[in-house]
Length: 100
Image: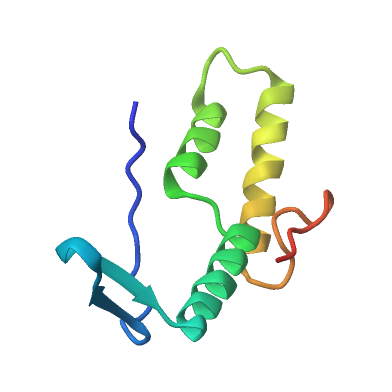
């Protein structure tokens, strides 16, 4: 199944189209636009989780078949997500962080 996600527009600066051989159109992206995209993506990856994922984890709390341990783990994951969303500590604070 396909997963739908909402996207946010960062900027159109540094992005254009150019005509290429065979009447083909290519996207041209300036290095600064790639830097902005990379920095934003890495920050979001480190600090934010998709709303759909958070909803799935939260649903464990109301699942009658979930064990006490399941609920404990779900609660800890949600608390960690709240802390990470503050932008100071990443969600992977205890497992390492990604570096580009």
